[in-house]
Length: 169
Image (cartoon, rainbow, N blue to C red; front, side, top):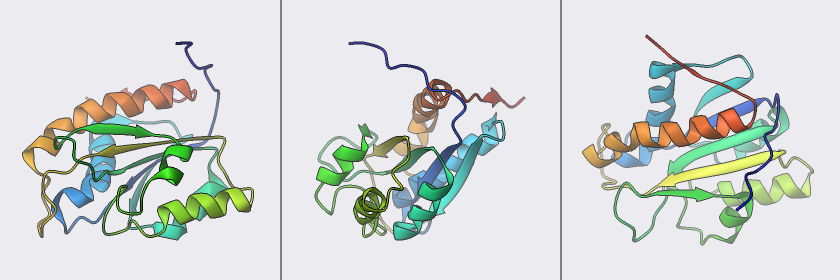
């Protein structure tokens, strides 16, 4: 497989989606907080707590050239399994796959972005299979353990886009 060409100087948004009140559903937000705690980024890289953005994600499509989404992914795979999804992958998903409490809007936002010429130059989503989706503000142990694994994957994407990160001391 050929290595993708390195992209340069994109304005990058890493957006964590999820509802912090529903356990693992809040993974994306917990992930962005994890990155902010352990890494520092240059101004071209913005970490965004997207909460339950839905269609409001279109605003980010207007502002950023590269978008990396972090969310849960409902699948029969073992909890903690990380799925990498392209723009086209998400458009093909059933409505109940990417996310739960905020699933309405992401697929629709991608379609609207295409129709209105707002599709970012670069897009990738990372979904993680949750272990529990009940009332609570903490991540399950299995998803908490996956935070550094996903961080390495996302940092590699940022580097490929011409960005960088430094570990905080």
